[in-house]
Length: 480
Image (cartoon, rainbow, N blue to C red):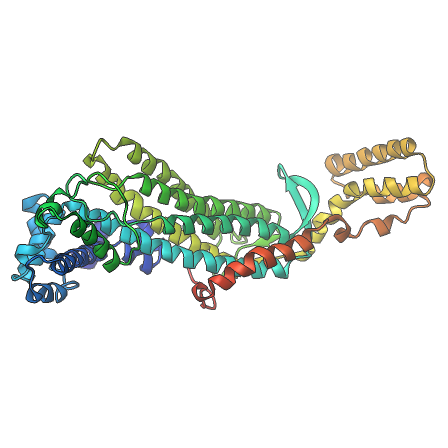
């Protein structure tokens, strides 16, 4: 069997093969994790040397020379014997830089490397998600502005309700994303390095290395954080950092999934009404049997991926709750799955979101036809008030509208006929003094929706986009 054919004989994550970007996959790849381990070992050794430990320039030079050319096969062989991934890579790294071998991992425990590397990956993953979110906000804001005053039926309980505008509805989707951005911003600000704290978080091994000098141990931790691009370290930990950090990050990712799921479901409902659709490629097949169909496959994929991501959040919360004292190892296997898959899911969802918004199709004539079906009923209150103003009796007028409305509704529902309520009212002498047609402009029923769009974009979205201008994607259209 060829190497290519054999790859079909094992399970590979669809998140990697089909959905997430190469960029996010790389951030959470084994290779990137091992590179980060080596950078942490180098940062630790450099800091220890700066604070007076007998580490030579030659040792550091050798380490710097092998940060990226990882001897994967040797590390795998060592792990089979040692049954410990980090120690296997300590030895594999040491074989490549023999002068440095005695001081690699000096004073450290596994979580000084593994936990900090996970935090580096989450920091980088959140940075990528911010780029994706800001770009989606930019595209959706343009859509909202374009359709600020396009009247459309509102729906409550998925039943026709007061009119809104297409742009106003888009602002609902936008506001969810703004809240997600605020949540990510808070989480990134408070995503601190675990630090260099040793076996149970007491820094006992480092205090011994520095002959009881507490200030040097404090400075060691600060130096490593600076070298790894972090401003702060967590003030206290056990062997691991609190797994509440993972739960908080997964909560943010779940929030993104919730926002995207709501948008995608809304679009699927509107596609059924033929008012809006996601992009549909020229040669795309909607159904293997029903050739006419334009299934909302991207939106359906978004909701599916969102459900997966939302389901990961409870696992992270359970892991945080389950940690015993300074640590247990029952977190390890779950975290290997939940963190990486959570970020890849969020990445895939936002790429889909951007792709859909960049190609959204709106059908104004269908929207107008649906308004025309329902507006006669919605306009009855305005018509009633106009007739009263013209001198009519409010109670007689109300009863007439009730009778005409019920008969018109019966025709629509029972006989499949069109709504003839307006004709009935025009023919009724009680309403002879009312210009009924003047009461039927859809924009007279949308309230402040267009102005709300303008104000929301000006007061919230434009400042956000201006502050993140360098993060907005410049692709003509993202492909998924």
